[in-house]
Every structure is written in C-alpha cells, then in structure tokens.
Length: 277
Image (cartoon, rainbow, N blue to C red; front, side, top):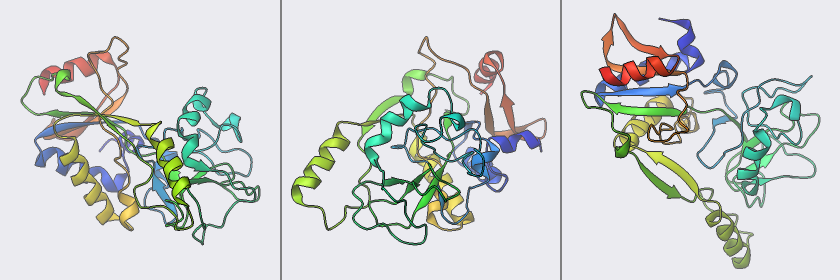
C-alpha cells in the first residue's frame, strides 16, 4: 500500500472507504486532508470540521502554539494560515463566540449561544483555534480538517455532472440552544443562521455513502464525534469553466493491478479515470 495514501485518509479508515466503494458499487474520490489534521482524528477533545464551518485549518504551528491541522483564526495567527483564510473566516464568524478570557477544555461552557468558541487563553497550546461546543452542550472539541469528498461516481455509468443537485441548508443549531436565551435572542440567532445558508453539492449516492462511512469511522472511534469526518457533499462540478482537477485519492469497487485505490494527480489522469469508471 502506497504511504502517500495516508496524506488523504487516516490509515485506520482506509479499509472503510474500500468497503463503502464495494458496498455501493462506486468510486469515491477524496481530496488531500493532510497528516497534520489526520494526526488529531479519533483523539479525545477533537472533532472533524462540519459543513457549517468554512474557516480554514492552519498550515503550520507558530512558536509554542500547536495550530497545524486545526481550524485557526487568521486574525490571531495570520502567519499560520493560507492566503485566502481571512475571507473564509468571515463566512463562519457568526457561529463563533470569542470569550474574553478563554475557556477550559474540561468543562461545558455555560450560556454559549453559538456552536463554536475561539480559544483566547494565550497560555493554551491551541490559542487562536476554534472548538466545537454546540451551544454549551458539549465539552470543547478542537476542530480539525475533515474528509472533503471530491466526487462519488457510480460504477459502470458514464459520469454526468448534471446528476448533481445543490441543496441549501441552515446549520448551526443542531442540538438546541441554552435555556438562558430569551425568545428574542433565539429569534435573532435563527435569523443570523438563515442569513448564512450552507451550500452543499450532492450526488445520488452522497447520503448512503457518507452515512456508511460515518458509522464505520465512529465504530473505530473513540466515540460518536470521531465519525464527524464526512460533513460535505462532493466538490466536483465538471460543468463549470472554473473546474480545477485537484489531486485526489480514488477508491474503487474492484481492484486495479492489485490496488483498491489510486492517486489522480492532474487533469489528464482525472479524465482518463472518468472514461474508465
């Protein structure tokens, strides 16, 4: 097995992707996740990035702060982030509470009206990073990169981008709000969510495949939150003139030359693969 595969998926999850490709007779294309994010997968106190969190993960640590692979504020650590990180940060800022004195990793934050909080304790190793707290109902779980599906292609069928549909959903209130919130606060909160809908592009097998993989990964564990690794629809949109053929790991329902997966590095390899599915 190619070691480079594990830049895309965690070594413990590789077999689950193969099983999903076989079970649903499809090809599953996954964008590169990066070892920095994958190092946190399954560790207590960490969770994969949900569809409502558009902010980017940090590319590097900064001094004593452990940031690489975690969702990080470019306002706090601009040197750790990608060039476009500030624009992406703005898309999810309404979901992130910024406390004045940080928070404890061992306690549920009280009265938090948003699903995320920013760690503002300068003595914390993840200072400047985002944690999932789900409106104070969870102990903080620092958010790392999840699996970005590039495409799910049914086997034996010509790939037709018109089979993709766009669904719009408003996320961020999946597990309830603090009891301390007044009715007016709840109405304003929902209005904010409705003003920032989450666009998700999906194909005919998205729900089945992601559910299968989410359950399999959660069973590998530890815990249900470990399964928060597939929270988006497919990214591919071949009908767009802006399409870029990103490097992906393609899982197949049948082995080719003894391998269940292969890396597609460029446009030429993508197009050749689509002709062969």
